[in-house]
Length: 269
Image (cartoon, rainbow, N blue to C red):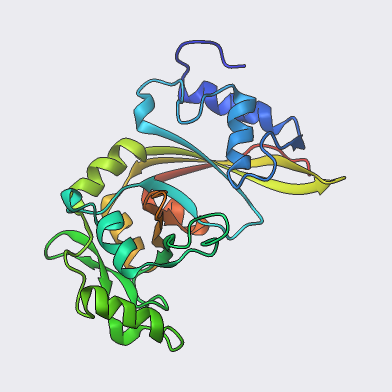
């Protein structure tokens, strides 16, 4: 266990190395998508999102399985204008669709607006992301002409509700707001990769590689959004808004930082 008080970056690196040298360890949160990170935090004795090192707010601890194509969540951030409460007040009621559990787990009226949106292409429901460098903001756009066939009934509902024009107000994130949030949440990151296996039905991890990522770069972040390496994930239902997330492809996270130090934690398999 990590003792109370602060430890240095070097000491935490050594603690992570010691966890890796344990070899295969049982998942502490089986069945949880975040189990690889939760297990690492448990083994280190670190409360979630609370690294006990100097300037803790400037560091983030993340872990990912090496055998997954899952996206890594960078941060949660609702779109502007904030006062409009765009997700629950505009997107969900007007562009949502019946929740798959409506009439069973939830009331018949339950709606869902859950989709991952990226720049350079449109979702089946006509949404895309654009980086507006002139106005210094990342925007969500809707184009009714891009909606896929088979969604005519849904599109008719959108037309009746708010029409088929552009989103009004348009959801966006200002560069300055993103820079501030990322500067606090993502300035420097410990990224740990782990192998995974199942033995007698038990999920196990072996932590193998540590990437120490330093000096988050906003311009590289924006370029990653433009090239589809960072995606925006809306996840709201009538009963609960699970939050809007910025997520990155696993092989792209190192490109968001000015400096990356990679450490092999264990040679054994």
